[in-house]
Length: 242
View 1 (cartoon, rainbow, N blue to C red):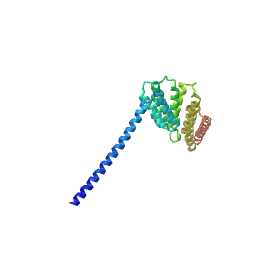
View 2 (view 1 turned 90 degrees about the vertical axis):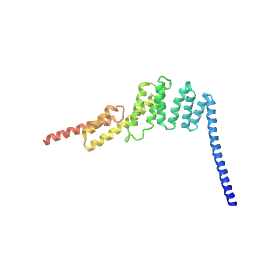
View 3 (view 1 turned 30 degrees about the vertical axis):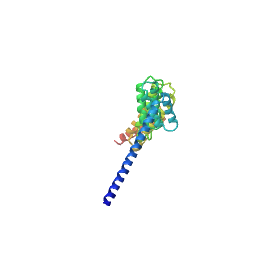
View 4 (view 1 turned 120 degrees about the vertical axis):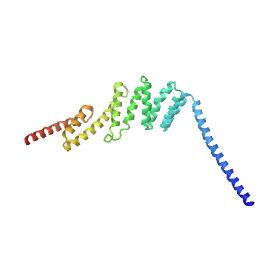
């Protein structure tokens, strides 16, 4: 009988501890949920300008990704206000500051599509080009991002030739152009060393035709003339041998 009572006591103790543990877990997560709801409710109770300024402070305090979410919250809470338009562009900027270029580009494309006549649309085009430009790592391995950067800067310059970002855009586009031209020149020189004159000529000609503002053009002209001279000598030599 004592053994049975002892066993029942242990079972009751185990059951009591289990109930206490489950109650603790429930209260803990309920508290977390309540805190989240209170925090969300407190944000929703804030005036729109205060919410916007909080997002700005969050960027300047070194947490741009969180700030981007806060700017998006401004847009969610006040979708038809001027603050929503402003916050959409600021969210893109915050994502850019966080090096989250894909999400920045999504926000920028949406802003440009929805507000093509907005006073800050020039900045949106500029920031979009910078998103591509900052992702250029090694043009020798992947020229696609360099080309996208060039295209984006070219579109900005076409739309805003005298804009405040025109000079910097022109400089960065020319640098990107020189990178692509440099890649073509490297391939052309390789073909030239191997004696593939036609292939080398095609590469040098491409630099001259497509990257006219590049600093690679003078060398491309020199190599092109040298390649044609070598080709003519080769033809003459073959003619003499016949």
